[in-house]
Length: 85
Image 1 (cartoon, rainbow, N blue to C red):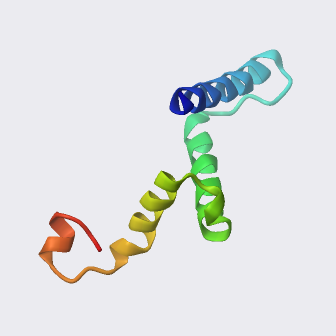
Image 2: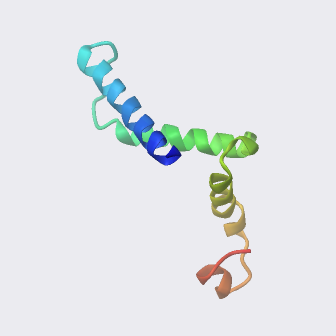
């Protein structure tokens, strides 16, 4: 249920920004705004991971730890192919 709500929240926010641009409340972007949206979302995730890691959901903490810390250290092909740490 949580994943559905988060998915819907992202779509709602995207639609509200588009509605604001179409209505003239905010300037229309020159191109597709989705890459900017994705960059901001990942930027916030990275900032939270570095400075407030306990606030992140456990599965996201685990994924980020693997991607940004554990994957820097491996001892052989087994770590690369199967798992790291």
